[in-house]
Image (cartoon, rainbow, N blue to C red; front, side, top):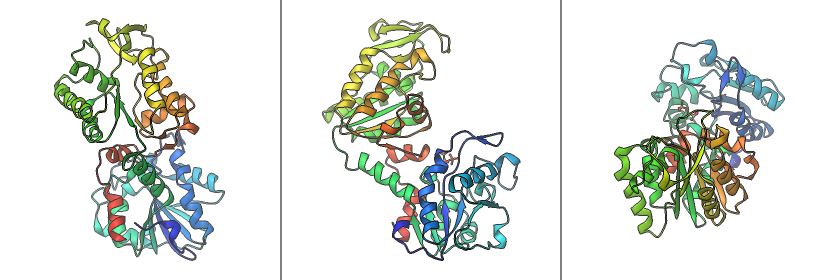
Length: 388
Ligand code: 3PG
């Protein structure tokens, strides 16, 4: 695909699809990471003498029924602070936009537009008519084929990738397409079912697959262990066995915990008991990995060439079950490996343990990051490639 940084921009109207889908509560932005991540492309355009039109979705509103909380006003206000210049929000852009070089305007929440979610071509043409150059910089929304990510790219005079999108794809490509070995993936979370396609795709690639949370419990079941009341999916034990067998057949491994931190219930105040996996009883709930397991995983990560991290290995939100995720996260941060992390829970853990600056690349993608790990083609990227 074409890249924004290779194009002449002076005097051009540049339409950038960003992902500024940030958490907003009562008009206050909880985390502005995605807004800041969009700055390089915007600033690049402004410096080059272009006018900038931004579009993003916010949340999942009902199209055609705008509510106050759907408005991008708080997002535009934060962006204006970061850029140090006015950013207006337009809700009647269909009537045309009057822009001078250096201006920044945002189209109101695109998901309020009829046809946005359905990738409507007329809407795509309407967006495209606003610009000379369309830039997709919304990695977080690259797995969605919607009018502002896909149809617009078909009809814009030029369609290219922005700075963030290009950086995300480069980092993910480096980690998964030509990784420095050993390649270690950490896939954790409550359910195997939501991450089964990722586990299966990674089984063909990784040298070590570290599983955590309910996924690890299902894998422990697959190895014949007792997990008591722990969260698991007994009906996916056969799939777990296949993933383990596939990786072992390639000379890799799926290291499962040898010790675990258990409780009688899932609660912030629950008493934590350290046990060997063999000692887990019917009344136990596994909520973290134990220190011996954490040290083993830290060793694996220390020797890795590449680490891909999605998901905490314990209930890190509760202090007594947070050590496993902290120790593993610290080991990733210290490791010379190229490390990439993505997903909401993972980013929350990284922020909580102060590891942000020591992970090689932190993705802004949630669902998009997961679909990349699955090996799926991202439609918003595919259309850029077609246009090039
Ligand atoms: C995200 O937050 O993962 C992206 O902005 C996509 O949002 P969506 O899941 O509502 O399409």
